[in-house]
Image 1 (tube, one colour):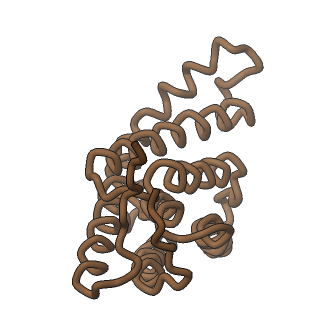
Image 2 (image 1 turned 30 degrees about the vertical axis):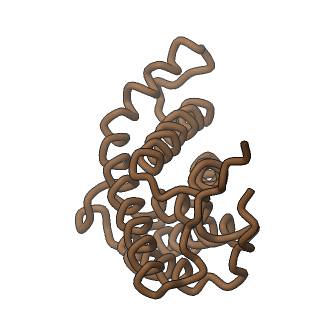
Length: 194
């Protein structure tokens, strides 16, 4: 078992998370000025779950979403902010990061985490759209649920690309910076006891 205690201060992880938040403020731009759904929030939430600790890992992406949702609502009153299904999905991103990416720098495992989180987001948010009858064709009939998923497909691919790009930049920069700085934050995979 790995006996090296985890560092309590995580300046490199926080600096990268802060940089992601700064880039994520592009979310406040009108839809015509950004690539739809190509955001850093998913990568940030996975990274926070894997590299930050406890409540802070959940608080950072959810607070970022709340602040930018409020900003977007003030700028574009027709938009509906604070979708509980979106917030629950980002909470699941953090949980996936914490459960499966905390002790790894493997690009394959990180890619698997991105795929799992983005797919979860797709299923949860489109179920929410169906449940809340976001479009007139969504009825109480379960027969219209596949329609919600079909209509969500065009939005899923840019989201998956944005999640993957932001996650690989964050995790890659973290691995590089912790090695260059000889930081105690460097990920050390757990030793296997035989």
